[in-house]
Length: 135
Length: 175
Image (tube, rainbow over all chains, first blue to last red; front, top):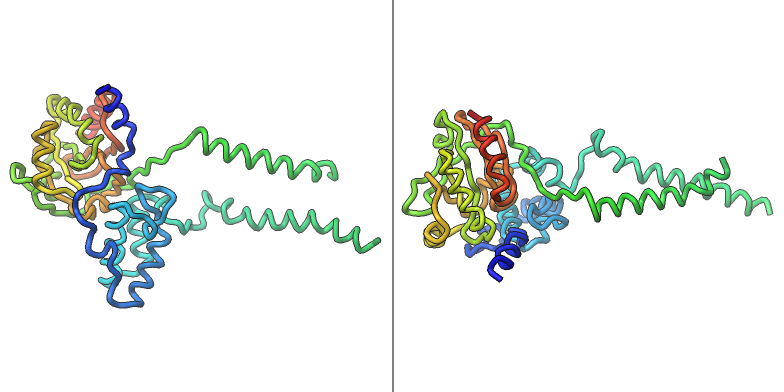
Protein backbone atom coordinates (compact mmCIF):
# COMPACT_ATOMS: atom_id res chain seq x y z
CA UNK A 1 0.00 0.00 0.00
CA UNK A 2 2.75 2.41 1.04
CA UNK A 3 4.74 1.53 -2.06
CA UNK A 4 1.64 2.20 -4.16
CA UNK A 5 1.22 5.65 -2.62
CA UNK A 6 4.87 6.49 -3.18
CA UNK A 7 4.51 5.29 -6.76
CA UNK A 8 1.47 7.49 -7.32
CA UNK A 9 3.33 10.45 -5.83
CA UNK A 10 6.15 9.83 -8.27
CA UNK A 11 3.68 9.90 -11.15
CA UNK A 12 1.99 13.06 -9.91
CA UNK A 13 3.20 15.97 -11.97
CA UNK A 14 4.64 18.67 -9.73
CA UNK A 15 2.51 21.06 -11.75
CA UNK A 16 -0.47 20.40 -9.55
CA UNK A 17 1.30 21.20 -6.32
CA UNK A 18 0.64 24.70 -5.07
CA UNK A 19 2.57 26.56 -2.44
CA UNK A 20 1.27 28.02 0.81
CA UNK A 21 2.41 31.54 -0.07
CA UNK A 22 -0.17 34.03 -1.34
CA UNK A 23 0.04 35.12 -5.01
CA UNK A 24 2.53 37.84 -5.93
CA UNK A 25 1.23 41.37 -5.68
CA UNK A 26 0.98 41.88 -9.41
CA UNK A 27 -0.23 38.37 -10.24
CA UNK A 28 -3.85 39.48 -10.16
CA UNK A 29 -3.66 43.25 -9.65
CA UNK A 30 -3.74 45.49 -12.67
CA UNK A 31 -1.21 48.23 -13.28
CA UNK A 32 -2.36 51.73 -12.40
CA UNK A 33 -1.69 53.03 -15.91
CA UNK A 34 -4.36 51.59 -18.25
CA UNK A 35 -2.08 51.84 -21.29
CA UNK A 36 0.66 49.87 -19.53
CA UNK A 37 -1.88 47.31 -18.31
CA UNK A 38 -3.14 46.90 -21.88
CA UNK A 39 0.40 46.19 -23.10
CA UNK A 40 1.02 43.80 -20.21
CA UNK A 41 -2.26 41.95 -20.85
CA UNK A 42 -1.53 41.61 -24.56
CA UNK A 43 1.89 40.15 -23.78
CA UNK A 44 0.54 37.79 -21.11
CA UNK A 45 -1.94 36.35 -23.59
CA UNK A 46 0.92 35.31 -25.88
CA UNK A 47 3.15 33.75 -23.22
CA UNK A 48 2.78 30.08 -22.46
CA UNK A 49 2.34 28.84 -18.92
CA UNK A 50 5.31 26.59 -18.06
CA UNK A 51 3.49 24.13 -15.81
CA UNK A 52 0.06 24.13 -17.46
CA UNK A 53 1.12 23.67 -21.06
CA UNK A 54 -1.56 24.69 -23.51
CA UNK A 55 -2.70 27.70 -21.49
CA UNK A 56 -1.40 31.22 -21.61
CA UNK A 57 -0.20 32.77 -18.37
CA UNK A 58 -3.19 35.12 -18.59
CA UNK A 59 -5.56 32.13 -18.37
CA UNK A 60 -3.86 30.03 -15.73
CA UNK A 61 -4.35 29.89 -11.98
CA UNK A 62 -1.05 28.14 -11.33
CA UNK A 63 1.30 29.88 -8.89
CA UNK A 64 3.99 29.93 -11.52
CA UNK A 65 1.74 31.62 -14.06
CA UNK A 66 0.81 34.22 -11.43
CA UNK A 67 4.48 34.88 -10.73
CA UNK A 68 5.14 35.24 -14.44
CA UNK A 69 2.27 37.73 -14.75
CA UNK A 70 3.89 39.62 -11.88
CA UNK A 71 7.20 39.57 -13.75
CA UNK A 72 5.54 40.95 -16.89
CA UNK A 73 3.67 43.70 -15.02
CA UNK A 74 6.70 44.77 -12.97
CA UNK A 75 8.89 45.03 -16.04
CA UNK A 76 6.24 46.90 -18.05
CA UNK A 77 5.75 49.26 -15.10
CA UNK A 78 9.51 49.86 -15.05
CA UNK A 79 9.23 50.98 -18.68
CA UNK A 80 10.46 47.87 -20.48
CA UNK A 81 9.08 47.12 -23.95
CA UNK A 82 6.86 44.00 -24.23
CA UNK A 83 9.01 42.53 -27.01
CA UNK A 84 12.12 42.89 -24.89
CA UNK A 85 10.43 40.92 -22.08
CA UNK A 86 9.44 38.25 -24.60
CA UNK A 87 13.05 38.10 -25.79
CA UNK A 88 14.28 37.72 -22.21
CA UNK A 89 11.95 34.75 -21.66
CA UNK A 90 12.73 33.16 -25.04
CA UNK A 91 16.45 33.36 -24.16
CA UNK A 92 15.65 31.21 -21.10
CA UNK A 93 12.94 28.85 -22.29
CA UNK A 94 13.24 28.88 -26.07
CA UNK A 95 10.53 29.84 -28.57
CA UNK A 96 8.34 27.33 -26.80
CA UNK A 97 7.37 29.94 -24.21
CA UNK A 98 5.94 32.31 -26.80
CA UNK A 99 2.65 31.84 -28.65
CA UNK A 100 3.96 34.17 -31.32
CA UNK A 101 6.35 31.97 -33.31
CA UNK A 102 9.03 33.80 -35.28
CA UNK A 103 9.39 33.21 -39.03
CA UNK A 104 12.50 31.06 -39.34
CA UNK A 105 13.44 27.88 -41.28
CA UNK A 106 11.99 25.59 -38.58
CA UNK A 107 8.64 27.36 -38.51
CA UNK A 108 8.17 28.29 -42.13
CA UNK A 109 5.89 25.27 -42.89
CA UNK A 110 3.63 26.64 -40.18
CA UNK A 111 3.32 29.95 -42.01
CA UNK A 112 3.36 28.50 -45.52
CA UNK A 113 0.81 25.71 -44.93
CA UNK A 114 -2.31 27.92 -44.97
CA UNK A 115 -1.19 29.63 -48.18
CA UNK A 116 -0.32 26.32 -49.85
CA UNK A 117 -3.59 24.70 -48.76
CA UNK A 118 -5.62 27.69 -49.92
CA UNK A 119 -3.80 27.59 -53.26
CA UNK A 120 -4.49 23.86 -53.62
CA UNK A 121 -8.15 24.44 -52.72
CA UNK A 122 -8.56 27.15 -55.33
CA UNK A 123 -6.86 24.95 -57.90
CA UNK A 124 -9.23 22.05 -57.16
CA UNK A 125 -12.32 24.22 -57.07
CA UNK A 126 -11.41 26.04 -60.29
CA UNK A 127 -12.24 22.98 -62.44
CA UNK A 128 -15.68 22.69 -60.91
CA UNK A 129 -16.65 26.28 -61.59
CA UNK A 130 -15.52 25.92 -65.19
CA UNK A 131 -17.71 22.90 -65.85
CA UNK A 132 -20.79 24.57 -64.36
CA UNK A 133 -20.35 27.56 -66.64
CA UNK A 134 -20.07 25.51 -69.80
CA UNK A 135 -23.41 23.73 -69.19
CA UNK B 1 -2.31 13.85 -63.25
CA UNK B 2 -6.08 13.56 -62.93
CA UNK B 3 -5.75 10.34 -60.90
CA UNK B 4 -3.24 11.96 -58.55
CA UNK B 5 -5.64 14.81 -57.82
CA UNK B 6 -8.36 12.30 -57.01
CA UNK B 7 -6.10 10.61 -54.49
CA UNK B 8 -4.66 13.78 -53.05
CA UNK B 9 -7.37 14.43 -50.41
CA UNK B 10 -6.94 10.88 -49.10
CA UNK B 11 -3.16 11.29 -48.93
CA UNK B 12 -3.55 14.58 -47.08
CA UNK B 13 -6.02 12.94 -44.68
CA UNK B 14 -3.65 10.03 -44.00
CA UNK B 15 -0.76 12.43 -43.40
CA UNK B 16 -2.92 14.45 -41.02
CA UNK B 17 -4.12 11.40 -39.06
CA UNK B 18 -0.57 10.02 -38.89
CA UNK B 19 0.74 13.33 -37.51
CA UNK B 20 -1.99 13.55 -34.89
CA UNK B 21 -1.55 9.88 -33.90
CA UNK B 22 2.21 10.34 -33.57
CA UNK B 23 1.83 13.37 -31.34
CA UNK B 24 -0.85 11.62 -29.24
CA UNK B 25 0.70 8.21 -28.74
CA UNK B 26 4.42 8.54 -29.17
CA UNK B 27 7.33 10.89 -29.32
CA UNK B 28 5.75 13.15 -26.72
CA UNK B 29 8.28 15.31 -24.94
CA UNK B 30 6.75 18.11 -22.91
CA UNK B 31 9.87 18.84 -20.88
CA UNK B 32 10.92 22.45 -21.23
CA UNK B 33 14.69 22.63 -21.08
CA UNK B 34 16.59 25.69 -20.03
CA UNK B 35 18.37 27.54 -22.82
CA UNK B 36 20.90 28.75 -20.25
CA UNK B 37 23.18 25.70 -20.45
CA UNK B 38 26.69 26.96 -21.21
CA UNK B 39 25.83 30.44 -19.96
CA UNK B 40 26.72 32.02 -16.61
CA UNK B 41 24.25 31.93 -13.74
CA UNK B 42 22.50 35.33 -13.80
CA UNK B 43 23.40 37.81 -11.08
CA UNK B 44 21.33 37.17 -7.98
CA UNK B 45 21.33 37.47 -4.22
CA UNK B 46 18.71 35.44 -2.36
CA UNK B 47 17.94 35.69 1.33
CA UNK B 48 18.29 32.61 3.51
CA UNK B 49 15.28 30.33 3.17
CA UNK B 50 15.74 28.96 6.68
CA UNK B 51 17.66 30.08 9.77
CA UNK B 52 19.86 26.97 9.90
CA UNK B 53 21.48 27.66 6.51
CA UNK B 54 23.29 30.66 5.01
CA UNK B 55 21.81 32.68 2.15
CA UNK B 56 22.78 32.13 -1.48
CA UNK B 57 24.35 34.67 -3.84
CA UNK B 58 25.88 34.32 -7.28
CA UNK B 59 29.41 34.53 -5.77
CA UNK B 60 28.70 31.35 -3.79
CA UNK B 61 28.44 29.49 -7.10
CA UNK B 62 31.84 30.73 -8.33
CA UNK B 63 34.07 29.00 -5.83
CA UNK B 64 36.40 27.33 -8.31
CA UNK B 65 34.75 23.95 -7.65
CA UNK B 66 31.61 22.72 -9.41
CA UNK B 67 28.43 22.53 -7.33
CA UNK B 68 24.91 21.25 -7.70
CA UNK B 69 22.05 23.71 -7.45
CA UNK B 70 18.85 21.97 -6.44
CA UNK B 71 15.56 23.80 -7.05
CA UNK B 72 13.00 22.46 -4.60
CA UNK B 73 10.01 23.34 -2.44
CA UNK B 74 8.61 21.92 0.76
CA UNK B 75 5.20 21.65 -0.91
CA UNK B 76 6.54 19.48 -3.73
CA UNK B 77 6.14 15.73 -3.27
CA UNK B 78 8.78 14.60 -5.80
CA UNK B 79 11.27 16.84 -3.97
CA UNK B 80 10.74 14.71 -0.86
CA UNK B 81 11.17 11.52 -2.85
CA UNK B 82 14.50 12.63 -4.31
CA UNK B 83 16.09 13.51 -0.95
CA UNK B 84 17.75 10.09 -0.39
CA UNK B 85 19.40 10.52 -3.79
CA UNK B 86 20.64 14.00 -2.84
CA UNK B 87 22.14 12.49 0.32
CA UNK B 88 23.88 9.88 -1.80
CA UNK B 89 25.31 12.60 -4.08
CA UNK B 90 26.52 14.47 -1.00
CA UNK B 91 28.09 11.23 0.26
CA UNK B 92 29.96 11.03 -3.04
CA UNK B 93 31.54 14.36 -2.14
CA UNK B 94 29.41 16.63 -4.33
CA UNK B 95 28.53 19.97 -2.71
CA UNK B 96 24.87 20.92 -3.10
CA UNK B 97 23.22 24.32 -2.70
CA UNK B 98 19.50 24.81 -2.97
CA UNK B 99 16.81 27.33 -3.78
CA UNK B 100 13.42 27.00 -2.11
CA UNK B 101 10.61 28.19 -4.37
CA UNK B 102 7.65 30.03 -2.80
CA UNK B 103 8.39 28.69 0.62
CA UNK B 104 8.14 29.70 4.28
CA UNK B 105 11.10 29.25 6.69
CA UNK B 106 9.10 27.03 9.05
CA UNK B 107 8.00 24.77 6.18
CA UNK B 108 11.56 24.48 4.85
CA UNK B 109 12.82 23.62 8.36
CA UNK B 110 10.14 20.93 8.77
CA UNK B 111 10.92 19.54 5.31
CA UNK B 112 14.66 19.28 6.08
CA UNK B 113 13.99 17.65 9.42
CA UNK B 114 11.62 15.10 7.94
CA UNK B 115 13.39 14.20 4.70
CA UNK B 116 17.02 14.97 5.49
CA UNK B 117 19.34 17.82 4.66
CA UNK B 118 22.07 17.67 2.03
CA UNK B 119 22.36 21.41 1.43
CA UNK B 120 25.22 23.81 2.18
CA UNK B 121 23.26 26.99 1.44
CA UNK B 122 19.56 27.55 0.81
CA UNK B 123 18.30 30.70 -0.88
CA UNK B 124 14.67 31.72 -0.83
CA UNK B 125 12.86 32.56 -4.09
CA UNK B 126 9.43 33.63 -2.81
CA UNK B 127 8.07 34.89 -6.15
CA UNK B 128 9.79 32.43 -8.54
CA UNK B 129 11.78 35.29 -10.11
CA UNK B 130 15.21 33.63 -9.78
CA UNK B 131 13.79 30.41 -11.20
CA UNK B 132 12.59 32.32 -14.28
CA UNK B 133 16.05 33.87 -14.67
CA UNK B 134 17.54 30.36 -14.68
CA UNK B 135 15.13 29.09 -17.32
CA UNK B 136 13.89 26.48 -14.87
CA UNK B 137 10.26 25.45 -15.31
CA UNK B 138 9.31 23.44 -12.26
CA UNK B 139 10.30 21.68 -9.07
CA UNK B 140 12.41 19.72 -8.56
CA UNK B 141 15.19 20.53 -10.96
CA UNK B 142 18.94 20.21 -10.45
CA UNK B 143 21.64 22.20 -12.20
CA UNK B 144 25.36 21.46 -12.37
CA UNK B 145 27.28 24.74 -12.06
CA UNK B 146 31.02 24.73 -12.77
CA UNK B 147 33.65 26.53 -10.69
CA UNK B 148 33.30 29.73 -12.72
CA UNK B 149 29.54 29.89 -12.27
CA UNK B 150 28.67 28.56 -15.75
CA UNK B 151 25.58 26.32 -15.99
CA UNK B 152 26.76 22.97 -17.35
CA UNK B 153 23.83 20.60 -16.99
CA UNK B 154 20.16 20.56 -16.13
CA UNK B 155 18.26 17.62 -14.70
CA UNK B 156 14.51 18.15 -15.02
CA UNK B 157 12.29 16.38 -12.52
CA UNK B 158 13.13 14.28 -9.53
CA UNK B 159 16.47 12.45 -9.23
CA UNK B 160 15.84 8.73 -9.06
CA UNK B 161 18.43 6.13 -8.06
CA UNK B 162 18.88 5.49 -11.80
CA UNK B 163 19.88 9.14 -12.36
CA UNK B 164 22.75 9.22 -9.85
CA UNK B 165 25.42 8.23 -12.34
CA UNK B 166 24.25 10.76 -14.94
CA UNK B 167 24.47 13.56 -12.37
CA UNK B 168 27.81 12.39 -11.01
CA UNK B 169 29.19 12.22 -14.55
CA UNK B 170 27.93 15.74 -15.32
CA UNK B 171 29.55 16.95 -12.09
CA UNK B 172 32.87 15.30 -12.95
CA UNK B 173 32.69 16.76 -16.48
CA UNK B 174 32.27 20.25 -15.01
CA UNK B 175 35.57 20.02 -13.10
